[in-house]
Image (cartoon, rainbow, N blue to C red; front, side, top):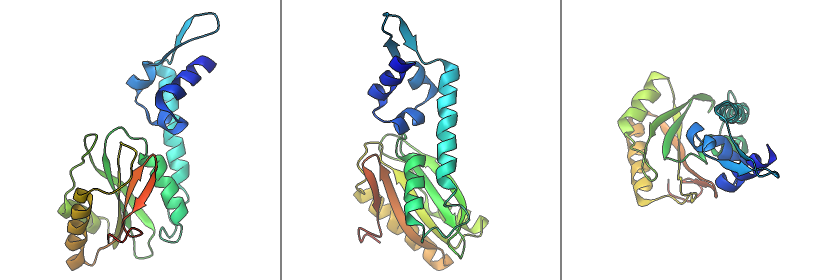
Length: 191
C-alpha cells in the first residue's frame, strides 16, 4: 500500500485532496511496488477513503453544531475548509443560524462548474424562512485554490444582503474557501 499511498499524494497533493477525490479519480491511480508489480486503489479502498472524508467532515462540524458560530470562528473556518476546500467544482453553501447564532442547518444550495455555481437570493431567503433562521453565513469554494472574491461574488453577496433586509434576516459573512485559505467578506470590508 505504501507505493499507492505515495502515488495518491503525488497525484492529489494533500491528504485532504485525496479524501475529497471521487471513486473514479481514486481508482485511476496506479503505482509500482519494489518488485515492479502494478498496484492500484480498488473500489472498496476508494469507498473507505470517501467514508473517512465524511467522518473528518462530521468531526470538524461537531464544534460548530449547537454552539455560537460567531464566537467560535476558528472552528467555523476549520469546518468550511474540510467541507469544501478540495471540491473540484464550485459549491455554494448556506449556514442557517438561529437568534443565538447557533447552526440550524448547513445546506448546499448549488453545485456548479470549475468557476461558477448559480446562486438565487430569493431561494436562500425562502429556505431561511422555512427553517426559522434569523441569520446566514454564505460559503462557497474556489476550485482554483485562490480564495480571492470575484466581482461577481461581491455583486451576488450584495443581492443576498438586500433580499434579507426586509425579512430581518442578517447575512453575517460570506466566506470564500480555497486550498490557500479562507477569505471573509466582512474582514475584507466588502460587507
